[in-house]
Length: 143
Length: 109
Image (cartoon, rainbow over all chains, first blue to last red; front, side, top):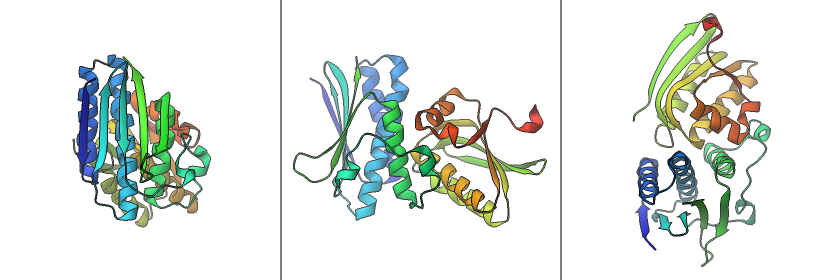
C-alpha cells in the first residue's frame, strides 16, 4: 500500500503546505474530484488542531501526517501533546456555546476545528496515540 | 495566497472586504485588523467574504470572537457571503444559525 509521510514543525505557515501535500496525494490516489476540497479542508483542520495543541504545551516536536492509499484513502494526523478524555471525541460543542464561551483563541480554534471535522468527514476518529503520548485524528474516504 | 483587507462605509455600517485565504497563518492579521476597528469605536460591522478562496476554523474563530465583542457593546455583525464553499463551512458547523449571513450588502439590494 502506498504511504506518504510528512512531518512539519508546529508553525501555522506549514499547515498550508500540509494541506497541499494531502490534496496532491489524494488527487493521485485517485480520490473523486468532488472529495478533494474536503480532504484539503479536513487535513488542514486536523493539522491546525495539532499545531495549537503543541503550541499550548510548548512542544517543538514535528506534527506527523500519514497518508495511506489502500481500499480507502486514509489521512492520519498525530500530535504529541497530553490528552484528556474530553479531547478524544468526534463531536464539537453547540454552535451557540461557541459564541458565549470565554475560551482563548487556541481553545476556540480547537473546538471549531473539531466541529468542522465532524461535519466534513463521515469516517472520523480522534484517538489516543498507541504509546499514550498525544492524539491522532484519523479520517478516511472511499476511492 | 496572502490576505488582502480593505474597509469602506455603507450607510452607517463599516464594511471590511476580505480576499485570499483565511487560515492559521493569516488569521492573526485579520484578527488584529478587526480588533483595531472595534477599538476605534466601530459597532456595526459587515465582513464581506465573497472573495475569500479558503477559510478554516481559525478564520471562523476570528468571526466568532468579533461577534462576541460586538454583542458586548450592543453592536451588530453581518457576514456578506454568497459563495457556496464558504456557506458550506458555516452550515457544517451550525454557525449559519449564529451569524447574520446576507448574500450582499443591504444597499446592493
